[in-house]
Length: 307
Ligand SMILES: C[S@@+](CC[C@H](N)C(=O)[O-])C[C@H]1O[C@@H](n2cnc3c(N)ncnc32)[C@H](O)[C@@H]1O
View: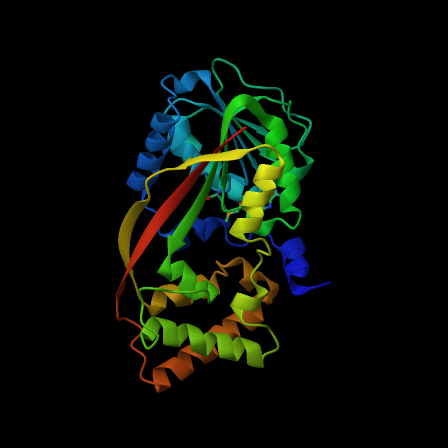
């Protein structure tokens, strides 16, 4: 079994659930703006009339503003703990919802309950065909080995005139931590040097660099081809929405300790704590300033796909 398959089979967001939102640095106002922008761009003037599904809904940061705008929503996730985080938010806002712990428990929504959470894999879901006007896919394709099946499932679930929103995130902070290309933070910055030290120590301890072990075997081109194969087409891309925040090496340390990147979860927790300790010692010896702040630009990119 290759590393990607191993990771994809072992990954559980249960580990990161209570800290997921903290490690993502999302801006709530921007997420809300994105939901409103998406609904306006799709000419959805009465959100109360539409049914929306998010597969891999997680702690609900993306789906929540759509719910607050009035849509009938179904959120599916394989991680109980991520759904628990979502439930906390719904309760706090006084939004009634139903929780289904089995895949067949889905009974539909009612006038009074417009939100349902389903615990299970989106790949095994028994949802009614052509039931959704809007399907949201945010940061899930790269986690699913059989991502092509996910597109097939979505094309079955989508109504004839429905839309699929594929939401990606771009941020140099996330890139640094995944070892992927980082445009705006210099190579010799303390942030990138810190991450390089960590990656080298990780390799020395028998684990591949994060970049090599990160899930996500599919490319954007492969995704586009697969979408086309199912008769779906990209209609447009919404205007990018960006925001800024500051981070330092301490934020990286937090994320490493909480194993916020999927690829970190193959390392046993005790080992990971030790790797972070050694990284910190070496970084301090090399004069890295762990308090130095760097400004990060973070953005959402939303592609609108239709049948
Ligand atoms: C990176 S998180 C994104 C969560 C959410 N979409 C967001 O953008 O905040 C990925 C989520 O997909 C979930 N997930 C992974 N594989 C899944 C599957 N086969 N079925 C349902 N959920 C899945 C994980 O548990 C996790 O909550």
